[in-house]
Amino acid sequence: MPHVVVENLDELLVVYAVRQAKVAFNLIGGSFLFVDEKDDGLAKYYARFGFVPILDDPLTLCMPNADIPDI
Image (cartoon, rainbow, N blue to C red):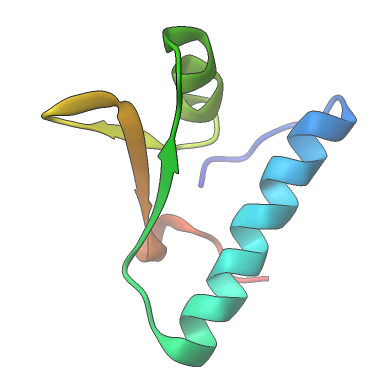
């Protein structure tokens, strides 16, 4: 996850959720965190946090566990 300057509550919630996913991955395992969006605007929003669209569906984005920084 790239360094993100949090400017509002929405961004804070995304960063918190991603970091909580990292905690869960460390406890029970996991390789990727997925986000399934409904429009291009939201997909671009999540791309700012380091999510990458998958090839066959650009509105489904993923982030490898290895890219999420440790807390």
